Structure formats: C-alpha cells, structure tokens
Image 1: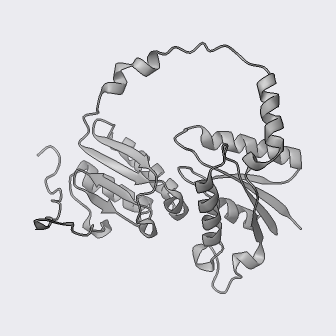
Image 2: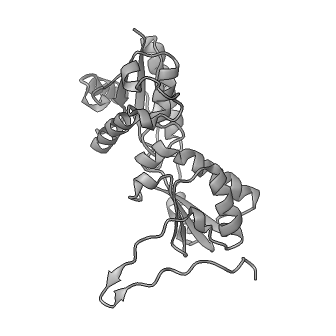
Image 3: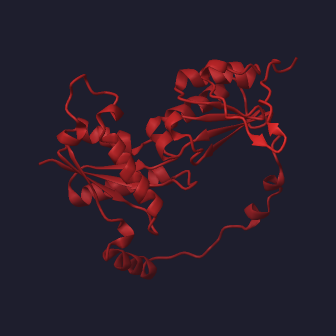
Length: 269
C-alpha cells in the first residue's frame, strides 16, 4: 500500500505561508520517509484538490490529510474535509476519462487530528522555549510610517475571491493571470487596486472577481477571461457583459434600487 500525506494549512495574510508549509512538508517527508504534499485551504497556489490530484497520479492508495494550523482552526478542519469530499465526487475531477473509476474507489482518503491536538506539541513548544533566542532589534518605525495613512488614487478596486471553494475552482490561476495582465498594461495600484479576499459568498460561481465602483461581478472565470476583463474593462472602461453575473435588485422603503450604471466611456476620454 502506497501511503502519502497532505499537510493542509491557511495563509491568513502571510505571504510566506505557502513556502513555510512546503518546507515543513519536506522535513516531515524526510522524517517519515514518505511523500508529504503541502496544500493551502485558501489564498494559495496549491489547493487541496491539486494535492490530491498529485497523490492519485503518483499511485497512492492511502492518503491522510493533516491540518497543520496552530492554534487549532476549526474553520480549516471543517472546510478541508468538505474540500476532500468535493474532490472525491467524480464530477469534481476534471481530468478523468469518461467511465473512469471514482477517485474515492481508487484511493482511500482519511482525515487526521490537527497537530495542535497532538501530545507531542507541548514537548515541541517546551523545546522551542528553552532553545536559542535573540533580542528584538527591529525598529518600530514601520508602525508609524506615513505610507500607511494614505489611500491610493486608484480608479478601480478589484476584489479577487480566494476562499476555500473558489480556490478549489481555480482562483489561484485567475489571481496570477490578473497580476500578469495588469503588469503588461502598466496598471499599478494608482490605477487598479487589487485586493485578494476571503469568501465572497456565491461560491458555486467561482472563481469570482468583483470590480468597483461599477459593482460588476465576474464569475466562472479562467485566465483568458481575465485578460479580456483587464483589456476591456480595467483599461478601456467597457464592461464585459457576457462574463458578468448581475446582482439581485435590492428592495428598500422606496422600492427596488436602480441597477448600478455600467462603465461605457473609455479611460482618458
């Protein structure tokens, strides 16, 4: 039986989280002498789905998914289990041939206890507390920098959903394509401010990108669609209607609200 491990964590706003988790997976792999693959539930390049795809392609017959968050993160554990369940549905695996075997029948996937629940965690923390340390030499000036008091002069604010389900649907590729396309068109933060968010709610429509101030929701995106959004909407001011999903009208005391206006005037005119 070929046994492998998927080590799952969350980025939680840390830009180095993915590399840190990958380094931990490498150390664990050497310690156990077996394959250990890192994956981030959200905000990462490597999703749980992609890690399980790699395990299956590598011929694994038994996979243990281990949550690696400290302190214990029940959100991580709950949504990681749901992501595994979604992956195990035949319809969720896009590279299966017609009539191929259900991935759940090919490979057994189990969910382990979080590392914070292991008795050895206390011993590990005790060892770290008694180990080498260093004085704090960083300057507090970063907390007082005037740069953190300035709002950028952006024309548009773009939200990219990087929640667990959009991550499973491919939001990492969408976010990367957006950054590449904006750089190629020389659109910096003073033109288009991009913020990667947690769940934006309509997860079944992911990957999702929202453009403000027009309040345009683009759904079910891929890198080619992102290029069109950058070229037509973010640079020329033309909403790409065929990629857009309208929000329901809001009903208030004065009746239904007006549909938000679309951008129709090219930039610079």
